[in-house]
Every structure is written in structure tokens, then in C-alpha cells.
Length: 234
Image (cartoon, rainbow, N blue to C red; front, side):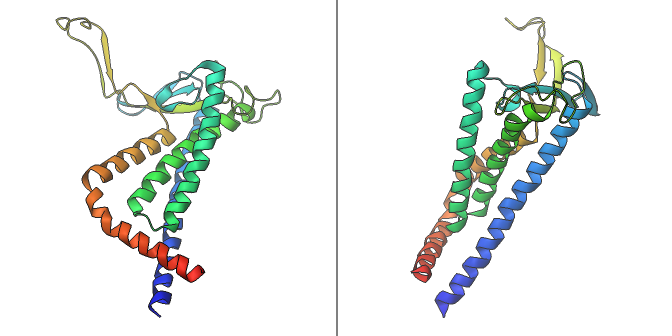
């Protein structure tokens, strides 16, 4: 009787974890793609407008697929990066499902879900945007243009738009080496998917550094859950 009750509780917890993880993934992926498609179909590369004052802006750029506007190794690097992201995304999906089945801590599930959806969000750009849109240089891109897209499968560019130049000034002249030069913080331009990856990594590090010891009960519970499931399925 106790085993049946335990298995019932496990089933409820597992369903809740599935809804939590895949609901979060779906929500972020939809928001990420809606924002990117709006920017792609309403702005030219290099255009910007202010959201909040001068420090919070939408500034449209495209990059070859790395986070925060970075590029990597030309066409060969782009292909490698896209293929790597496909393999990594598949691996993270397998790991997420395994962690749900084992009853992992929810904060760990949330972290992995955020990192996974961030990778998938940028992978969608790399796989399909080159096929579905034309170039954004000196024009606003159109969806499914008659002449075809600007790049083949896996060679699309990732759309970035969030720009937070919180500090935009120049170094004082008396500062050695950099005196008189511009100083910008935060200069990286990123998207919703990049934010999800960053938040997931930060939450994971915080959990490990400050709350790792509190996870032992959850680990013991996970081991018990796994043992019950194996016994019931035997």
C-alpha cells in the first residue's frame, strides 16, 4: 500500500515537473521568436530606438550564432557551431528528461530548461532564418521572399536586439593607455535566448555555491523515487 502511495506521489511530481519545464521552454521560445521576427520584419540592420531613456535600446544586428553578438570562424566555424548546437540541444533534452524521471531538484530542472531553450532559440535562427527571410542590409526583410532566402540551411544569422549602454562616456585623460577613449558598459547586444542561457547558468552556479548542501535530501528522495519506480516496473 505504501509503495502504491509512493508511486502515486512520484507520478504527480513527475507530471508537475514536465509541465514546469516544457511550459517554461515553450513560453520563452515563443517570446524569443516573436521578438526576433518583429525586429527582422520591421527594422534594417543598424537601426535602433530607445525603450527606456538612452540606456535601454533596441538595436538590430545579426551574428553568426554565438551569444551576445560574437562571431566564430567564418563559414566553416558557422557550420561547426550550428551542428554543435544541434548535438548539444539533443543532449540537453535527454538529460532534462532523465533528471525529471529521477526527481531532480526543481531549481536544477529550471536551470537546464533555460539553457536548453536558449540554445534552441538561437538554433532556430541558424537553421531557418536564412531560408525564410532575405537580407536586412539597407532594407527591411520580408518573410518567404520570391527570390528565396539569404542563406542555406544551418547558415542563417542569429538576430540580436537588446542593447543596454548603462554607462556611455570617455575615460579621463589622466588614465594611462586609455585616457580620452570611449568607455561603454554594457556594450554587448543580445536576445531573449541569450538571456535565458545566462540566467540559467547564473542560477545553477548560485544553487551550487550557496545551496548545494541543502540538496542532499532531494538527492536521497530522488534515489528513493528511482528505486520505487524500478520495483513497480519490475
